[in-house]
Image (cartoon, rainbow over all chains, first blue to last red; front, side, top):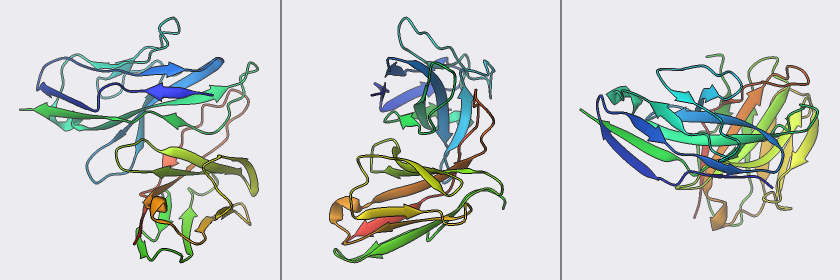
Length: 114
Length: 117
């Protein structure tokens, strides 16, 4: 079974400050990790995935298999980053085929103050 | 709007009634997922389809729940004899399937908020 834990329900920072949203997972196999974001009155949307190793809107996340973590980071937070952030895991077989479902954490509400 | 659509957006029903939700995925996406989200929690997987085949069902999906995707396009989720504990946001998502090392993105709909009185 897989599990995703986001230890912080709420996170507040000031504009321009660094931000880190924590995500830890448990899964015995090879996972795919994602960050999804939900802005106010909008639908859930993909922010980034560990496979892509890309930076989206200044956010990055590195998969640390030793610590089973996938923390989301941004060096300088902006007010428009205020949103709900979900970390999610998708199981993947040893052959690389993914099992479709996503397992989500409880989410972290990020508030960036001016 | 070419995104995933869900209907209705809100549903209020009395305990014991049956309800049905519809999801229209992005055109040509052959995978379709249903999730349930209760207050303060992340989405929880219910079931998913590849084309018309239902490939996986969560233990959350009791006998009162049934999902279909008869022609491999839109899907319906029916809840029979609703209970107050069924009150939640029901989310639908769709994705393409892009091969063995699937990197398909799940695109979510706006959800249907169910309130059972």
